[in-house]
Length: 266
Image (tube, rainbow, N blue to C red):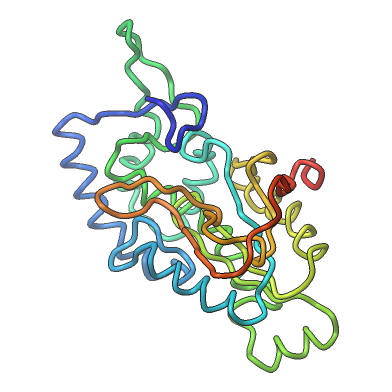
């Protein structure tokens, strides 16, 4: 199938049989409450009672304060490249039933039936089109949520700790993620925002993922008017599939483009 948002290329999607869909739906009912108890509040995609508009409200609020630098993150082929071993390790950390673990692994390794009737082996990734895939993707991507939640200057820091950091010239951070789209708002400087790029790349590499150096951008909030902040404008089941932020601040001069992350990520 063609990629979303007019991006060049295609991605493979799976259409599970009716029996598989029933089993996946049942498995999701069992697993979702377990992982929902662990997921950070900065994650909004494919979660019950959470939506992109909530993330938009948070980004607008923080942008009106001192969080003026934005790292717009784009992950290369997220659903295709998630490491099975890393994902299963995260699932095993919360689930001990070997029958459930065997089912999850079976779905990951199910493969894709090609046009010529052969089965293409699934070495990495979660099958797009599967009921269980969004939950498993969130399990893998939560490694990024947890990293920034625990980082100094993150959301778990107290007001006094954040104030002290700014007095010392240190940045504060807030991450917002909708599925594989995310933004990191920084109360600091551009150079401090740029310094996050290799850090993010390292965290994502633990689950087999890579930052797209061409599509990952660093933007000052003054440069945005109706820009998409680390997001897509498509819809899925009536919900936006990314985080879109709009402000009333001036737009950047005509012809001036935002640099990509290529020169900061190896």
